[in-house]
Length: 331
Image 1 (cartoon, rainbow, N blue to C red):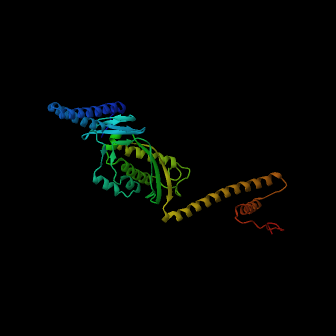
Image 2 (cartoon, helix red, strand yellow):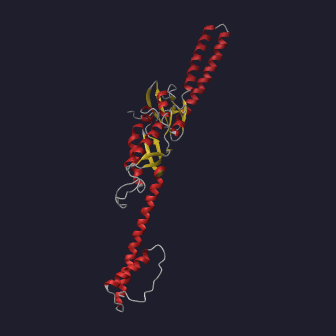
């Protein structure tokens, strides 16, 4: 694997003066050669003409070595196919004019990337060639919704956003065909893998308060797992993942209605459970307070009847219709 090496580029302002002097000298020598050729000294004029042409050619070549770097940019220097180093010094710089300026990719790699079906990849790779300048700033990739099966086999829709940047320019340029396409493809692959490891939500046989990690209730843990997966896979391309978050999570449309009814049933059961627990406590409190006063004697049968009536009143959905009993429980 490639490893980034630091290269140094000279200050461009010093070379501006050298290039200007070279142009002036070449023009002056050319004028002097024309004057000498016009006179009787033809040999000296021819010599001055050759020197001026050589100096002008060297100055033009040197003029091609200027480049500028903004903060958050780096230039990969390649000399005749050999990696020399990476310049990260910002400002106007001058380097060897023979350094390669366009690091193009092969047609085969471009075609394979375009067949991935990712809209973002198609836009970024249309006629795209890597230049020698690489951005080291943080970038954001907002992935599209994809359909995948969770751990239980339920089809779900999921999407993520990834914040990444290039930390090793040599790996990004030389170890993969196109590092941007590589990030997009690996992100989708890692998201599918993480989504298949966890279940969407707790099932009936799972305790909602257990340590089982699910996609819906443990967003932080799932995002952390996705970030570790991306870090491991993108390390070979010199990419550092700063953050990754799920932006969309839902059941697929074909099972969304069934899962909604299931969630509603679970909510109703949980509510009924709370109502029954509260009603039992209220009944116990009422029976105990009536018995402690001493004025009302309640045997087991009357306590059972009172508990039944109170439970019906407290747990019923509609308002209770009171019935006044003028007799006794025994007649």
